[in-house]
Length: 379
Image (tube, rainbow, N blue to C red; front, side, top):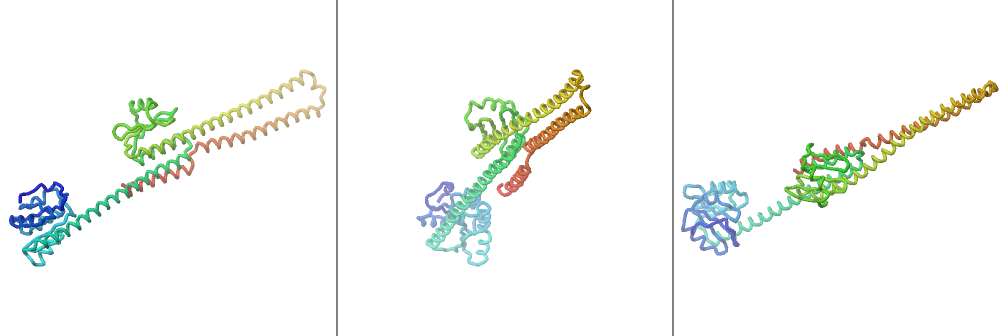
């Protein structure tokens, strides 16, 4: 029988039979009705051909100028699963041990009954196909496992951002946290927040990127384009992303959290500005009251002299007036001191609202440690 194209799939099991005896090849191939037999006089076909559609390789030990056991060893370097059946006229144990040592699955001695040969072939093919099926299921399960692991990791990145962003007290801290989370996802890009300069994960920003962000109001909420690129067009935040991959939903969750945090921090900054304005106003009132009291004291002294009242006052009366003025001056000073105490509390509150909390620092450190550990475990 002539050599066939062994890459062509067959409905029936396919066996590649390599032997230097044409008569034996003809007898076997014509005698097996349930198996598609591909024959060859040359061992090269077993070493050079694609074995993906071969269910079994049958090798004679004594080929023309080549040892079938060496061919078997070469097959094993290409494919560790496809079964190999060795046939030989030799009956001793040493040949069987050598066959097993080079990776053969079974051995049959010449001459053999065609029925026995077919039974061995079908048994090896059945085991091989079950093994391939199990291996495919294992690979599928492994892929699902790692996909689940990665999915869990991405959820953790979002959750950590949600927790840490709630502790952010400035937009600088929030942007740092956002870019840190992007780095965990291996995503880069340019972020633009209303009333603030755009910022890039890579430092520099191209003019084209700014133009796209400026004109983004014409685009949809999430606009995917090009190779792994997308524009996330939120109401007060826009992010032009590169290397998006499968992170569309993850980035959308990050943008939701970012937008909420930006609104919260801007409201907090507005409150801080109002508090500082109140502090400045209190200082002005305090200064005005102090100046008015000094003016009142001076005016009263001048009026007493001008009206000639001072000459009619006894020393006790002068002392009483002086004591009265000093009393109210003391009362005003006491009010000022109390107001200064309130101002100090107000300043402390402002600093507390601006200073990153210890909890925020701990979260950043935890995210950095977990990111390094997860990269080792997952990738």
